[in-house]
Image (cartoon, rainbow, N blue to C red; front, side, top):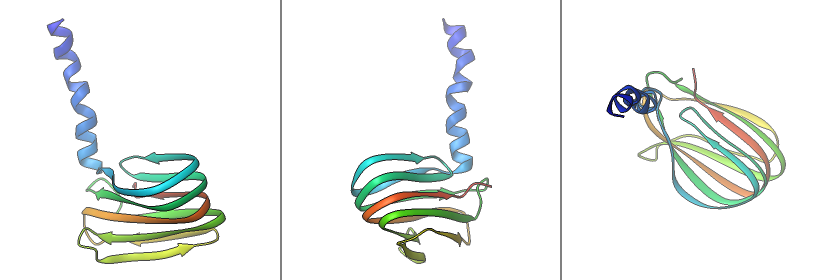
Length: 134
């Protein structure tokens, strides 16, 4: 049993090492209600597909050496509105826009580090995908 544990130990450490190189995504604040929603959060992507969303939520993302320095967003709106605010951890706004119809955006960051993405939903029905993968 000990030998099996020794052989499997590297496999348990590998996801941590990959996350450190690519960055991390964490929800740091959420005051939102979702109806019929599917959310995905990875090291290089956040996405949501929802029938109805109201409220706000904030992600902390980490842009590392192995991720892109550009955040790319694709928004599909069937109803309502969703707004995006991208800022530094010191609340310096890099991008802000509200979408009431389909649209795209790109935000280039000047250096690797942690950033915030704040979303505000107002009867939002639709989907979005934000990525920062190379």
